[in-house]
Length: 287
Length: 156
Image (tube, rainbow over all chains, first blue to last red; front, side, top):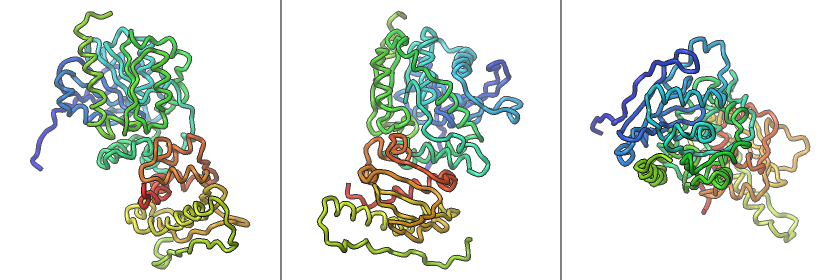
């Protein structure tokens, strides 16, 4: 294999986030409409590696994927050793808006998966005007706890192994082996208690069921894409949001809960038509 | 106790013979699952990667296929005994119980959405996981591999 660099550029962004100094790792590639990508709980921005490397997307979009604080190559805030990390909808919304402002993005498209797919519903509800379009991957308004999440962070169970074990079945059985295990590796590398802390948002704090009917899917340019093998954010939940908000909802065959990471090429085949529509709409003055 | 256990452990259990001669519907199907469970030992022990993943696992767990139970004993990641019920006082760490039809769908070569994983069955309410879950959760990828092993031989 001859050596080659990928077109992705990664840098560290120092900024005040949620009132505290933070050092965040941010990757980007491409030029054009800004597309801000949000990773899943307990993982990091590497999930978007396929998208960042796909010339069909980067030709018209500037893709930006940041690692949330505590995740990937972003540091936890100073003093983290004396805190229990717990993500809330309030902090998550603020984080996205503050990072978007810090990067001086002009009405970006925001795309999030799983917890990211949940928080974009909050953005569509509260801040639609700040985004030219909103894409929810594996979006659901609420997921009731179905196992005891305390297993994810305790000294007598290896956190990396159990986090990967918990999510492994969310990947489609048809996913290529290399991408399946890369996806699991990211989970194995999560810091202690971080996945569990994200799930506080996903399963407890981030319940948006009573606001779904107030979301205007057309005004906010909301698109929903969900993998058929996702048993966490189910097809039924996604189609229901589509029906209630007027958002376009598509169920992706042969994909699970991590579409951009478990089989990037297949995912892009579903994403491209959406990006085309957004690009075509961008030529039209804002509604 | 690594090092203290002799090399060959597999007790290949013959399929339970139908000795009462009754012709009841579903009987062949039941034998098929019997055979599948009993093949677990061979399938798991022949897969060096699965055995390595479970190299610290030493426990006995219960699998229930409908109302039929099997105790699966594991030593250092290898299945060393599979004992079909009925049991008088079964001794096991944790139990996985699901209806026969759920396991049949789970064991298809390419299971449909909702049946591809133990946690998928669990979330649908088809699988019950009970008992001391520590060995199960601490070795989750391993136990998922063990229970999915019959897929390797599934026709479809």
